[in-house]
Image (tube, rainbow, N blue to C red; front, top):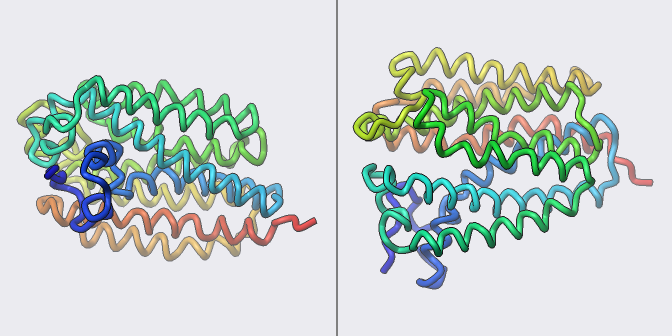
Length: 311
């Protein structure tokens, strides 16, 4: 039987229902841990909603775009994880939380992992080509960010910032899918997402800080240490402020800003409940960021629904 990674939720669908031969590949693309797909997808939907609220959209077209981004987020998150695991296979073998991942555990060979990665990228390309040329160009522009990310932990204390630049690229693509261009509003939303990622991925990195120190991997968690809490306050405050500013720049009524209060309350909950020396607690708080992202999406989505064109 294939061993599940230590950070996968118990009784996930891969463990329960997937054929044994498929399990290593599904784990390689993190299908047993959907939180990463949510964190990649939510900025796409935020960008879509921002553009729809500002410029209007036909409902069926908006739903189609949302579905395409969902498929794209799933396969490209999987491709990114496969690439990351190929590059980091020697590091992963030395870290308790990642030692059971398919490549370091010997369940998938490196050549097979590359072939699987290539297949996922082909699916992602097929999805990308459904959008307008501007969005296709934007998507192609993210390749450099994706390719460089696994190496950032070797050269900077802020690999979380690079992840933020990469994971929130979808906010720009979502906006461009409707608008066919970029304006200051989606750029500010992108900056808001970057701050959000700095917060949640710093929390995530606290799980591995002792092993990271032993193998020489850098992270914002190791750098900030006991100053994590004030840093999180700053990251999450900018997340809310950036989202609010993007809404105002897009001409959304200031009344919708009140709907960001639940998101702010959720971030406050994260900060007060976090125990940086308890890996299980860090994982639980990290995973809660799906809900945080959806709460930031909510006012954008409601504003978009109010602006839909049914003609």
